[in-house]
Image 1: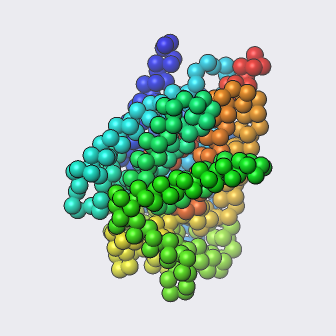
Image 2: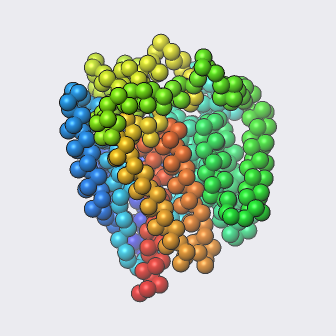
Length: 436
């Protein structure tokens, strides 16, 4: 193992420890710095589009000052959004390299997650905290800060898909065992929305323009869903009953029973349609339904009291806070269906339609570019695995940006985006290596 490989492994280990243990709280203070340093160490450069997008955001922010100036709301939102945009609009430097950074990073991640899951099983079955519902006890070394066990569900789901593709490519039984282990571990977090997104991403990633492959994907997911149902039934029937009620509430849709997450989309349309400037360029960072808005404007959401402000921006006060406040929210009872969070909706409201369209176009453009490059690298098993994983993670990312506020949960969004960037670097390395 040469010095560069050892250095990469050491950095991956430090990143995995900081992302997947209680140390992830450090990202609340160091997130932009860690992103910038990581991109620099792995030789990613920012494109001109990043500068253009920042100028547009600055212009929209300047125009939003006609309402009022909300410095804490604005700065906290930018603290999360700018690193996200840096990832989207960064490009790997084209250079020849023989190091498979993707496999190295996911191997290190797998080791940390095995430790997390083993601790989580002991917590779930033997050391139950009576102050926390059992389905929230699967915490491992991740801790209950912010995401809690939901974060483990997401990382376990990604690893289960990765090892499933490795098993398909190699037929090594150990990869099938890893797939099952990480899937069962993901299930123990009892994060219904996370499992729904896993199903969506799996189907979109596996479906090709052949009936046979589509049927195969549906059959596999049906087996997994039934397995999850019975596992839930035997391990935590209370969580099963809660999830059944959530599904029933969506199926039995009526005006008096509308989930507040859907009401947030309705409120966005009602509020922003009255002001064309805010609709196109946004009402200002952190001024609608983002996590930043609630961390600053809600007296009970979040524990960082130094962030709190008595003033509330107009759209947050009348169109978001009314959906999620101490008067209508009960911890462990009002979950995903009643949270008015959506990163896409936050972009639309706070940064405007134009900025949102550019950001999502950037995600789509990255996917199309890597899809074209991956054609050259798919002769080998690893190239096929990474092509599937890139598609899976892209769908996974977009689904969570629509359904929840994961943009502002840096330890998870960093893990997803960094893995995508390493895959991009893998394909650029392959193409340059072939041309050299």
